Image (tube, rainbow, N blue to C red; front, top):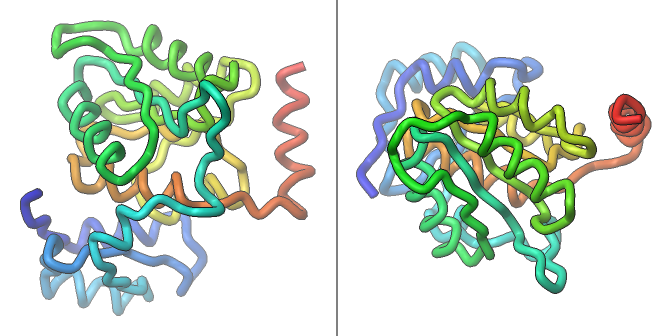
Length: 216
């Protein structure tokens, strides 16, 4: 995997939606290069720079990751044509990391309709055939709209680590939608963090139940 240059815009994305002083930007040792502008921006926006080893990020969670039952995979993935290559690379990376993965398509880079694949992914998760799902298109927002039409799905379109982690901790998101424009490295970073993060429950459960009521 090539080295990723982390600039000030990456830091700004990490700070979006986070409480002052709570944002983090996770960087992989040996794979990320931090610019001076990014370092200065992090200091100004109070974004913590967290350096981790690649092995630490790739290790599957032992207790907070998706559960695996008989016939159930940990994570299902799908995409439209605009995210075909990024999806295939993400599938391979997650399998190397030890996750059981179901690749639902699309089958190639030829033009196709994202609602078809987003619906298939959401229905796979809703039926219990996968503990969680990751859907990719060019931006990620459109697929979230489709997935959230399927009963029982709580899909979150995320472009930063704080949003991905919050969607798990506070909303118990069971589908993550990503945009291929983020690139292979960031999509993998967000997917791994999201898969390893647990749901806090507690005061958040009442709000998640209010979401469920909309299904009825």
